[in-house]
Length: 189
Image (cartoon, rainbow, N blue to C red; front, side):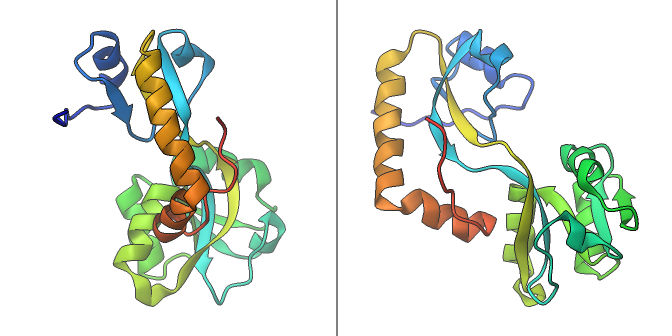
């Protein structure tokens, strides 16, 4: 079988499955009731989460530990909404217009911690190992699934076998630890 990669954007990835322009969508694709009406999903293949990240030297284990600290977040993003739900009263939240500005503020020391998505944090940590950044606590879990067209049960089941083998071997945990700073843990089927 020959692999053909088809670039997609958020707006067209579901229609590409529905029209058979793509067989699988492998991305930061969350599973929800609305999407389940039009496509099928494999088992979750990676964790995705919004979380707080900071230097290893900064003692943060939960929302209360943010008291008196400065946290950068992208204005209006899911992590901004989730942080607002748990923020202690004297948390200084600095909102930035996009992920790049939020990351730049953290890297330059304008904020002590950053609330962001796992993929943004993973990339930031890989590019800036000198900062000693680590995952502190989750704001919201939202694992990634692979999307398949409705009725493609044979393909979905084969992909599920591959995912199950990667989970059993520990490979998914190793990759999640490497790229996201935390093991995958128990992902939904």
